[in-house]
Length: 211
Image (cartoon, rainbow, N blue to C red; front, side):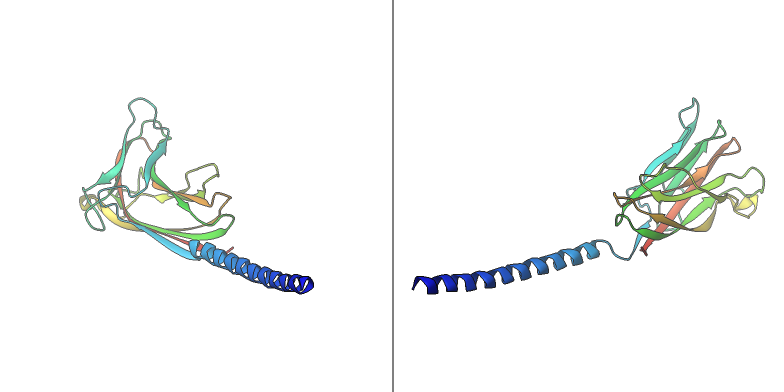
């Protein structure tokens, strides 16, 4: 009688172990699927800046010198989408100052991304002389943050046209580090020395993972 009980106990134990292993395996698969769901292959973020900066921060470089006046904030002066945009104002007296909006995005760690950035940019710079430079950068967050200079701020219009909305589009490739963060900034570099105002609206950023 005792031997039979022992044999039955061993049989039940093996079945229990198999069931436990199955449950663990299923749990791992579920967790893996959840992880994949957390990091889609492609994701797009859109910003129209209605009343707020919508998670973007104002920043720049060489803005601490005396008498440098600058403003980066939401404005209802003009817009290309809805009622508000972001105004970039800088009175540059140092030949090195720049202002921009910046934001961090949480993506999958250690992955390579194609990043497509597009937005509307309003400029009143009609002449081909004394143009400033547009900044648009996308980098892993732990990299040394640098401004990537793209093209001039000319609107290719005439003086009487005032501010003209231009559609800007840039593509980048970046590989995330352990944090999974990607840093983006959009703004202007102010050279030659003068005071200028620009506007940004309707930002669309698409991250597509391929590694």
